[in-house]
Amino acid sequence: MSEMQRLLEIMAQLRNPEGGCPWDLKQDFASIAPYTIEEAYEVADAVAREDMTDLRDELGDLLLQVVFHSQMAAEAEHFVFEDVARSINDKMVRRHPHVFGDDSTVSSADDQVNAWEAMKKAERGADEDPSALAGITRGMPEWMRAQKLHSRAAAAGFDWPDAAGVLGKVREEVEELAEAMDQPEHADHCEEEIGDLLFSTIALAKHLRVDPGRALRGANRKFEARFRKLEQLAAAPLQDLGMDELDQLWEAAKKVLAADTPEVPADRPLEG
Image: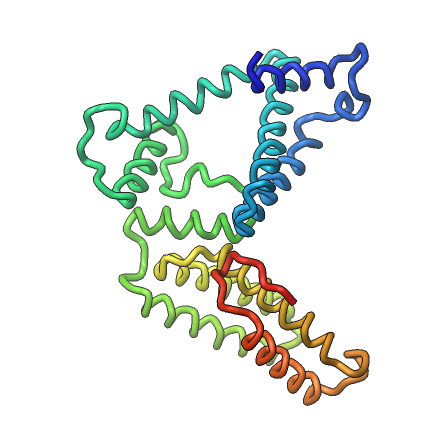
């Protein structure tokens, strides 16, 4: 028996009303979906840490989510796991005609991205939403959805010609946020301007070929390392210190970490 078949049989037994697991039997698609998302993030974290043992385990956890959903679908007679596998197999062959066929128009990664999006649009059909933005799920984190929106709009010809233009837009949004902050009675206006600033910053990341998720993970790790070092250097509780003292401690923490920690890629964890 293959390990894949063994996993399918384990899941079927867990969901078996006769002798199955009470927790597994209680679940439905909606209750399991958050775990599926969580497991995907844990895969990304293992990749970021370059921990291949954890990556192996987290990929197993993510695979279990696919099997769990497939088992519940089979019970409701919607589809089975083989249908899921067949669907993605057919899609990968269909969307890679330059690999599995005789299409010679794709010669670079950018060509493939454009061809992939064109095929997705064709598959949606003329009777569905004709917008270039059609099919972008609302279930993903909003920063990821912003990436998709920017990419789709750019593919349709709606984009800045270069990064300098986007940087100008980011500066414009900062100025508009500053103006909104001068009107504290309009808190909703500040929220709107923060949203515009974030959206424009993600557009800038696209032009600079920077993954905003990876960049933010790096910034988070850097902040965490510096803050932990600041806590170690502080001679009193932070809430008892003034801003000048906190600024001095922050700069000291930065210097200590710069001296003690070699430069690491954005997705490598910093110690501190």
